[in-house]
Length: 319
Ligand code: TXA
Ligand code: MG
Image 1 (cartoon, protein in one colour):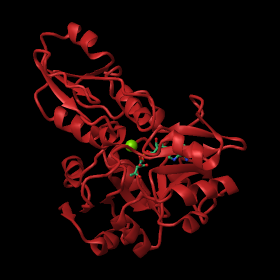
Image 2 (tube, protein in one colour):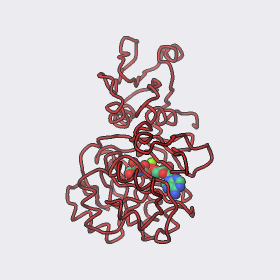
Image 3 (cartoon, protein in one colour):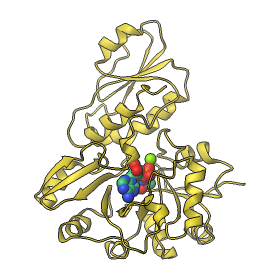
Image 4 (cartoon, helix red, strand yellow):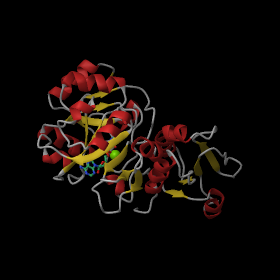
């Protein structure tokens, strides 16, 4: 199959209407999209990503009013949706019958979101049906934040990549579930917990482990092909002095350590800038000639939570 990287929303819509896969830009990461309401289209996502069928997909649309067709919203859920969508937030809600079981892997709940990217919003509006879209990476690998990342992984396997430039947020959406008097976070992501707290006035707490199907919960994920260790850099460095090391850090430069190339995600100490650069940096390190990656633990506030979560699970404990 010939894979086109292009800018035509019209062409992308044509493929999606014929139940083919199209990679779409969002503000978080690129998605591998198909018609969410057509089982044979959704199946192609699982096959192409090599993703287990028990791992459900997010339903994307262009307006909160449209999401009402697919999920049951409480007043608080609607308030949060109106305030934060389009944006890097996804809500886990009771699903309506319109949503096929393959999308939710049989669960009675569905995750819905509105991506904040002009091209994808226009595309969603043009086609009229919602899109199922997991991150456009092979299952378990680093998520893509440019059209070129997608091309590298899926050239020859999908017909069209809609190029919307590099993703502005750079980490996946925050997945939240609204309970009666608090909010559960199933995945830390592009929307800060502090902002969800402020909009809803509710306590926002991590979902108990094992309470969700989220692959975000799988221990290892987002993994580069070389080992990654997370912790205090100078301490870790002592164990690997002979190696060719890439260090990923927030704002401190570690190039004074011998044999180290230092990748500073945000010299100006902005956690959102660091998040934007994270996956791109991991991918370029992975394409280089390093033996291993050492990564700092980031401050545990704002987008730092999402960065720590991704780095933690990028560690090589599983191989
Ligand atoms: O930012 C994002 O959310 C990106 C862009 C493309 O929109 N999408 C994304 O999808 O990250 P994916 O499939 O890579 O991650 C979605 C996560 C998975 O961990 C999945 O298990 C979880 O959401 N999820 C989806 N539907 C669910 C459901 N019904 N119940 C529990 N977890 C669900
Ligand atoms: Mg993913």
